[in-house]
Image (cartoon, rainbow, N blue to C red; front, side, top):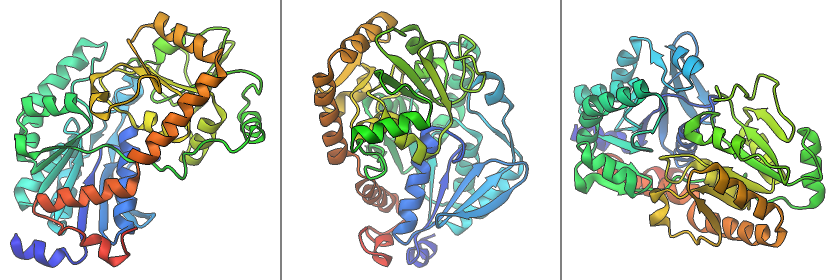
Amino acid sequence: MTERIASSARTGRILLVSHYYPPHVGGIENVVRQEAEQLACRGAVVTVLTTGGRRAAADLEAGVRVLRCAAWNGIERRTGVPFPVPSPRLLLDAVREARRAEVIHLHDCLYPTSWAAWAASVLTRTPLVLTQHVGLVAHPSALVRGAQRAVYEVFGRALLHRARRVLVLNDTVRTFTRSHGARSYAVRQLANGVDTVLFHPAGSAAEVRRVREHYGLPVDRVLVLFVGRLVPKKGYDLLRAAADPAYELVFVGTGPSGDGAGADDGSDAAGVHHLGALTPDQLAEVYRACDVFALPSTAEGFPLTVQEAMAAGLPVVTTDDPGYTPYALDRAGVSLLPRDAHRLRAELVALAADAPRRRRMGRYSRAYAERSFGWPEHVRALLGHYAAAGAVRPGRASTATGTG
């Protein structure tokens, strides 16, 4: 293995593994795409192993080779749980790609794509790095909760123990990984990055009006934005329950919902707007057109959508999750609340009536994002973790194109 790593380090061959990848909508998907494209920009040869389509196909997307294995997505369509069931060919693809790579970096250990990558790592003795985004999700279904526990006890323990680096977003996930077999010295905190150029505050009132008119949103109302899957974990039902005449709700995302409303069924109530799934460019526009971002989710720590909203200069209202503790957020700058519709409504009503406070919180959001969430810094740290795992030499991938 030493000779293979030494020779391949000249190009930096990295295999990223994710259950889904854009255009499928989701936070993990966006993180993996950004990591893949940023690594490719620094001279690494990057392959993403994921699912999608009806048959295996590999395409070059923004300098990244994306290999999509055929999979059945009925679980997500019927329950909202993003759990693709891939073709048995996935294991063969994983082993073949692992032989070409000097490091395998997989995202979350809950999915069959990750299990295949773990098996490929064992068979080929390729170093394994794991990003664990969340711990157990408090899903309303006892069946789903039980399935999670079973998977983490079997596959999760095997993956977490084998990984030479386990990257987490916060102390909550750190504790979860340690309790499921991760070695203490292997666990490191690494915040997701965000594109602070794409996601930026609106430049003028005219821009806000133009974007609102384009998406059919009212131009003279306070708009509260939600971005994510329309499922209880994300707090979609709580925000709907917190609706109030003081503001209107804008939902970006797709998926089944608890009360039968959704992005695709045309059943918007008065003061509620569903925009469905949007491209990153469209999403950045909608962030700039809204006044407040609200995400009453559970067990997420620091979700990517909160980072994007902060980069766009929006005041943020989200759940008071222990996962935010390491980030030392100023509670005057970010509103952290219990998952309670009455508390959520009261806070949103207060913000709707207080434009100066919204502006102060928005300035805090943008400054924090610029200071803390740059993708170049994230990828430099990632390359360091690959090096610690015994794969890419520090700075090797960046020498091809500069430091970026």
